[in-house]
Amino acid sequence: MQFSAKVSDICKQRSACAIIAVDSKNRLTASGDALDKAGNGKLSALLKRGDLGKATASTLLIPQLDGGAERVLLVRAGGSSLSQADFRKLANASAKAVTGFKNATSYLAELTVSDADTTWQAQQLALAAGLAGYKFTRCLSDAKPNALANFTVHAADKKQLKAVQVGIDQGSAQALGSNIARELGNLPGNICTPSYLASEAKALAKKHAKLTTTVLDNKKMESLGMGAFMSVAKGSDEPAAMIAMNYKGGKAGQKPIVLVGKGITFDTGGISIKPGMQMDEMKFDMCGAASVFGVMNALVEMNAPVNVVGVVAAAENMPSGRASKPGDIVTSMSGKTIEILNTDAEGRLVLCDALTWAGKFKPSVVIDIATLTGACVIALGNHATGLYANQDKLAEELLAAGENTGDRAWRMPLWDEYHAQLKSNFADLQNIGGREAGSVTAACFLSQFAQGYKWAHLDIAGSAWNSGGAKGATGRPVPLLLQYILNKK
Image 1: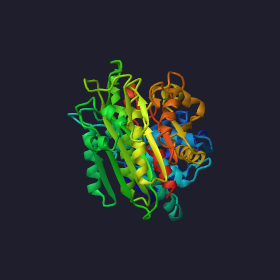
Image 2 (image 1 turned 135 degrees about the vertical axis):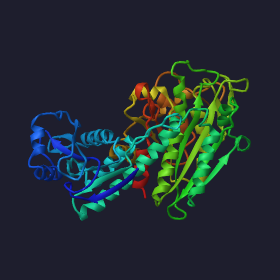
Image 3 (image 1 turned 180 degrees about the vertical axis):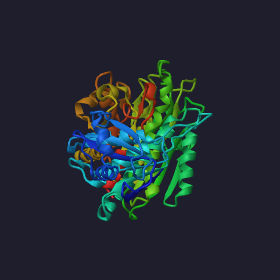
Image 4 (image 1 turned 120 degrees about the vertical axis):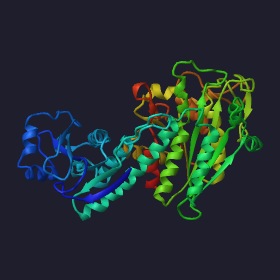
C-alpha cells in the first residue's frame, strides 16, 4: 500500500472515497462544509434524515456528491474534542470501510483530539489503513486480497503538510512491521519452521547493506553451552536456529538496542503434552520472533538512524524419544543449572540462553518478547501486554510508547518474594513456580539471566493473536517497539 500526504480541495480531489467526520450535532469539519456548499446543502439534508448512527465511529457510505470523489464515507465523531481512544475508533472503522476501494483520501486529521497533534493523528490513520489492508492469502487457492492500494491523508496547508508526512511515515512503518509479523504468525508450522525463519533473516540481509545476519546451528549452540535451549530443540527432527539480525543505521560505536524474540514455531508442550483442543493455535507461539522480524523489516525500510539487533530463538517443542523429561536437569549458557519440572514451560528455556547470548552485543538495553504464559492471559486478557522491567525509566518509556500507539502494556511486579517460588532441591532453579502468579514467576526466571544490563520482558500471550472467528496474529507489539526505538534515536 502506498501512503501520501496532500493539501487537497475535497471538491476537486479525485479518489474512490473521501472520508469525512460528522460530530454529534451533525456539524461537519472544514472539508465537509466545503463539499456541502458545493452540493447546495445535499450533505446536510442527508444527515438530517438520521441514516448515520449516533454511536462514535458509526459509518455511512454514500454516492458521489458533486465532488471529485466517487463516494463519501461519513464517520460519526462525537463531540467537538475527541479522546485519543475515540479517534482510534474512527481511524479503524473508516479504514475497514474503504478496504474494498482502490484508493481513499481521509480528511479526519481536521478533527481536534485531546492531547494529540496532527502528526499523531496522521500516524493513527496510516497505521489503521495499513492494518486493515492486510489479508492472509498465501495458503488460499483462490486468493482475493483487499483492493486498497493508495491511502492519502489530507493536510490543511503546506505548513501542516510536513507534520502529516512525519505521522504517515511512522504509522505506515508500524503497519508494515505489524503485517510482516502477522504473516509469519499466521503461517502454519509445516511452512514456518526454524530453518524458514533463518532463511527469511538471511534474505533480509541480502536486500539491505546495513543489516547482517548470523545463524547458529545446533552444533554451534551446543559448543557454546546452550544446554537450556537445546533441551527444547532436541525433541524435534527440525533443526533449531539462533538468529541475530544486526542493523547498523546509527552512529558507529553506539550501543544497540537488542530485541529477543521467542520463536517456538510449534509447541506441543513436549512430554508435558497439551490438550488437543485449540492446539493448532500453537503455531502462534513464535509471535515474539515474528514481532522482531516485523520491527527489523520496518527499520531497514525507514533507513532509521538507530542500531538494533534482532535475536530470534527458533525451535520446535515436540515429544519424542529424545525429548526432555520432567525432572531432567540442564545447564544453561550462563552456567546456571535448571530443573525442568514441566516441558511445556519451554519458552523460558530457549530465552534464558538467548538473553545470555544477547550480552555479547554490548547492548544499551535488551527487550525480550514472548508468548510466554497462559497466566498472563488470565491476568490481562487480550487488551494489554504484560510488561516487566528491571529499571523504572525503561518501563515508563515502554508504557508511554504503548499509550502513544494504542498498543498498550501494563507493568507487572518483579519482587524478590516471587523468586522463592523458583527454588529447586536439585538445581540452581526450576523452570516453573507453581500456579500462583505464573506470569510473574516466569519473568522472575528470565530476570536471573538479564542481570548485566537494562532489561524488559513483554509477555504477549494474550495480545499476539485472536481466537475464534477472528483467528489470526495481531502483529503486536510491533507498534509499541517501533515507537520506543524511534523515540530513542
